[in-house]
Length: 155
Length: 475
Image (spheres, rainbow over the protein chains, first blue to last red):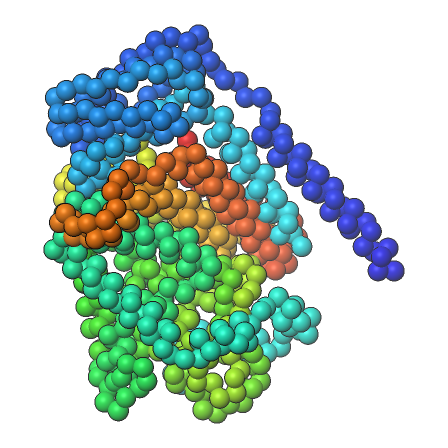
């Protein structure tokens, strides 16, 4: 009696997991248009002052050859880009340059590397290389998690 | 009405006593009483281990104030800034709260001198006690003042978190306030009603896997002396504990119970959540919304790329700061509460529920806790982890005076956590949203609503919030 009652329930539970896995896989692997155009050369002049980069958000396409000219306007500032392993430092009034190929798609923070004052640890900018598929896929996963949580809580 | 009955946590004891046998069995099966582990029993039974831990934190606290007031004013080279806002904050958010709920309160140094004065002794109560022992005003009970305190810290956060002098003075002020309040009011009035950290630790303790509870309610109810209540520095009666938000895990009740009828339980995560409440108190709902709003605001200010926003938050008194303050307060006091109220109102309309809106808001606010806790942990990962190397820097040179106590070189390079932190943050937010949706669905079911449709507005609130956090942290 008990086994008979359990059989359909465990079967349903198996299908729940299968649907959930299918949704997760769909979100993770469904193709997202990159919106990429032909690689080009881009130069950004970034003015670094306490505790701000201007401009603070750089948008490039995957494959672009990017040159950043860092100009420190008050004290010594640095710039290090997460995920690219690039770093430079500019003395006040002087320009430091870094050139690289933006071959990693996504969103990367850059931050100051030289102590420049109270908010130095939070002096941050952002390099956006093409669209950010990671963000869109994770938003999709939030939807799946929401659905799964509500589904599980129904018992 | 006796003082015991007047306690906020004395609710529905009679209802609890009518627990069905199956739910009682489930309760017993899902708990592990840590107090029965012999070595842990010995550690908790004696007051010495806790006293030593609190003595260490007290010495560290006083030293932190000294370094804040007299050390280098460069935040990243000052012990106070790094140990409080990086080391302690990370440990609190990633360790104490998710693993032990309000466990930090059990070793917090801030109320310690006040406790000693109140009880007239250090380890045990003495003959001569200090203080006038007034009762905390009924109108000020709940977490309203704690929420306001947290908002106040948020308004000045860019300075408090980066200026050693300000951090030193804030810690000193909290210390003085705690001592002063213990001389005027009975029990832990500062911890229960003022301390912002106690406020959100207590709230998130409902989701934590640790609880202090009575083993056999009948034994407790029949015990005339109520020695646990007499000994509790928080003024709590363990039999009346409905959740873990108010208990500071000081373990005094375990030590004094002559019947050995108290347990320190390991329990499933979120055990206090998803149960319908009859209360219409909105203080905890507001605190839960403030914690959500603050996590958003701090993520934008501290890990976002907007320099103008950082400058606005930093330049206190300027027009830009006033605009920041207005935005911060509007987010926490108007926008999020209004949005959540709208979602719960929609739930009420869709489910044709008969209960007052206030009660439904208080109920559904339980669902905000897992998401809020995970959002704070996710924020802390990008806020504090890259700066953990600075802990060694300030241990090497606490005042920033050029000392080399540890004789370590090349420790100033920040940790690159960009390789794993986005994945960890996303995983935490996914867990938070899953858990919150689960709590919301459970609450609906416990109200007798089997239709999922009414939950959609509240779930949409979680979705919008999670997307905003994702965009700020990994976008």
